[in-house]
Image (cartoon, rainbow, N blue to C red; front, side):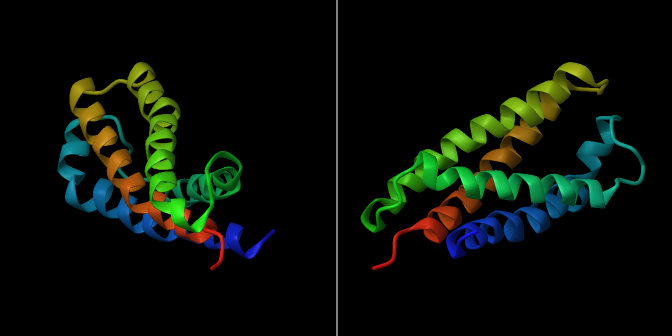
Length: 135
């Protein structure tokens, strides 16, 4: 594994874990509680394991899918943010809304799509910087 892979891995994981924890378990905890779909005590190690897998995938995929030229990092970050967030919504948000009981599908979708957009607005530029070609 290259240095850029591990930097991209960290660029995903380090902001995602605290952002996810704060969003789901602090800031919007009451809204998620009202959805009546989550267990009383979440299993944080499972969430962290999911993030570790995601960090590996997104850091591995980024240089294979997007331009890593130094001058193009901004546009590549924007493209990756849009594509990766759409992918995340497709495998982590929509199936949950389709399969699980909840008091409001619309509220769940609103919370989770907003979180995913914020998450990738933060991590996509960091991953792009991690994989940017050196000067």
